[in-house]
Picture 1: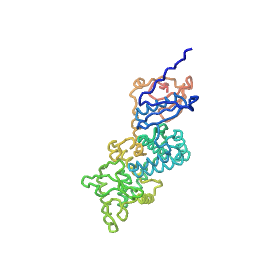
Picture 2: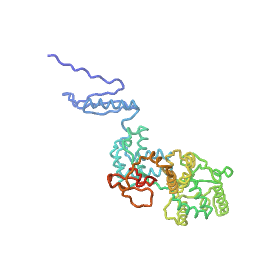
Picture 3: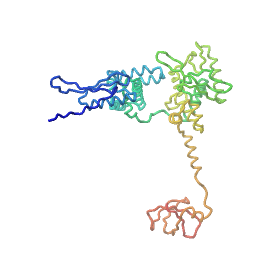
Picture 4: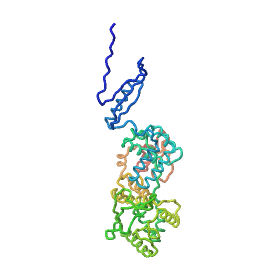
Length: 449
């Protein structure tokens, strides 16, 4: 009997990986497992053990596919936790983040670490991320807090994948938190008028509310303004810096949020308000310790802290006797809401705000006002057609009419010349409109609705 010879399995080409068998002993040649080995995208040899040759070959094919697209399939830091990954990413990107953004991300990182910080970063599953978001929602964290947690987790893994520290980004498999952020709207017109009139009693408050509520600068941008930023002849204001408190550094001047300076044109009335404030400021400089040329310094001429600015605002709300708990930032939204009610072109609105996206402007800054709503309703009434047809023939040509005997109509006494009635004799399921027009005696012209 001839011995059957099995055909040799095709071997992988050079550089395409290797599969070899390992036996338990040399006597019985019992197969124990298959070991697959291949060089990854960075040239490092990686090895895995499988029970069958098919599993080993599938793994090799996966590694070759990932290497072809320049991707890694494993982490060089297998023991790194999620908390360590977030800390590493935040330290690397701290210089690129604004201080306020860094503080928000730091707070989001603490909330993430309480839920999944001890899990291995390489094996973090989409289910774990879903669990994190569910826990934040169950603990009544705002939708903004949930989105911050999602954003920093996605940023950390995206950076790690880019640097080759993680093979994949599991956050991309999870939908971001959905929901409307409850941002504050503009100050109602009546309350804003009360605030503005109270502020106009003092040159400092008048200029501060004018720039915040009529021009729309951010509070930190207003505190960073210098008198040298005003071109008195051209009536323009240069906005190129903001004043912020940074942990460990105190109050520092930084570029504006969009990193681009902008020039805002002023009215003659605004120039006069600022001149009055400057003259009043000059009279009180005898008590100053420093002079940085700031428009809105503290009582010693030094940069004004945001807490002191908010304290002044609360006092102003008390003087104005308004009931709303408004914030300083709502002045900015009030300014653009009022400018938007003037039907200003989008390009000019963006020039004032410093934003480049119109959707951001209308979603977060410009809101509908009661005054504009009233004008629209009045305009709708003005669009309604008025007048009477010149003749019955004209009416009949425009609207299909049919005549009924007056006795067939149960007419309700009314002062209106046109009202809705029902035909009680034969067609009670339909509503008809009765209109008094000159016609034959005993005949009313009606139109079925």
